[in-house]
Structures are given as C-alpha cells and as structure tokens.
Amino acid sequence: MYEVDDLDRDIVLLLKEDGRMPSAEIARRLGGIPERTVRHRIDRLIREGVIQIRPIVNPSAVGLTVTADVWVQVETGHALEVARRLAELQEVSYVACSIGDRDLSLQVNVSSNQELYRFVSDVIGKVPWVKSTSIVVVPMVLKDVYDWTIPDSALTRSTNDASGYGRSPQGQPRSQKAAT
Image 1 (spheres, rainbow, N blue to C red):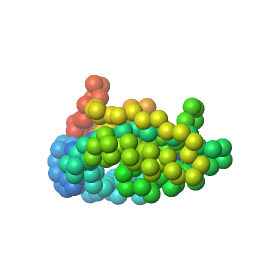
Image 2: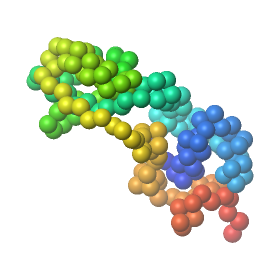
Image 3: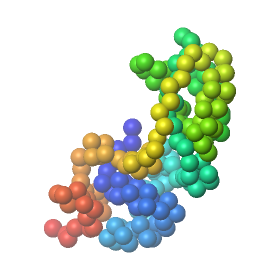
C-alpha cells in the first residue's frame, strides 16, 4: 500500500483542476516545492496506481443527456460473466458487482428516456442470465468519481516531509516552513 501524505494530496487536488498542469506550475502554486519533487511525486503516484491521468468525457456535451443507474439481478453463478458483457456496451459508463438485493450496478448514458427504455429492455434485458432490472433516472449529479479526492483518513499522519511541506492546522495547503 502506498502511503499518501499532504504533498501528494495537494498535487492531486491541483491535477484535478487541470490534469495537464505542468509540474513547474504545481510547484509554484504549492509555495516553492522543487519542480523535480513534484515530477517525482506524480510519477510515483501513477506508477503505484494511486492516480491515473485520463480525459473525462462529459456525456451531455455529446448529446447523451439522460443518465440512469440500473440495477441488475442475474441468475446465481453468472454475475461476473454478465458484468463483463455489460461492461463492453458503449452506453454503459460504470459496472460493479454488488452485494444485497441486486447483483450488478450500472450507470448508463443515453440520448432520451425512450432510448433508455429501449436499451434496458432490448439490450440489457436480453443478455443471457439477466433476471430483472431496476432503473433510477439521475437528473442531477452533485459529486462524481472524478470529484472525489484522497480523504484525511488515508493520509500518513506525518504532516511534514524532508522539504518542510505540510498542512496548516485547518487543513489548508502550507508552503515551505521557515527553518527552525
């Protein structure tokens, strides 16, 4: 497990603002952290699988204005196979196996309510081993997966690294400390 500290999280927060932000700009905005340190941290975060830097497609901008959560119940023993088939569908942006009343959780993006009905009935409903579906139309998303960041509970308790970087007691980014 990779140990994430305050500097890593602040770098991630700036990359969330702009995934193409140059290391030099990140270093400047973090109060003079060496650019080399920032580059090294980003490379390590990527290498360790903590972050990925990829484009995020806005479904509405390409005409897919209806988003729905679809819960799928499948015949016993076939959840993973059905999940893999559904993950291949272009309209499906998220697939997860779940525990509880339903076996799979999907997010679907389509152009209209009629298209949603057709897709769930004629495509998902006809995948072998699908027993039933349940749809919830999502009219507004307040926080999405790309808005999520590293929580305080996942940070190492050390608030300073060798560069003297840390966070203020209020949790705000803090630039290099004065030498003591």
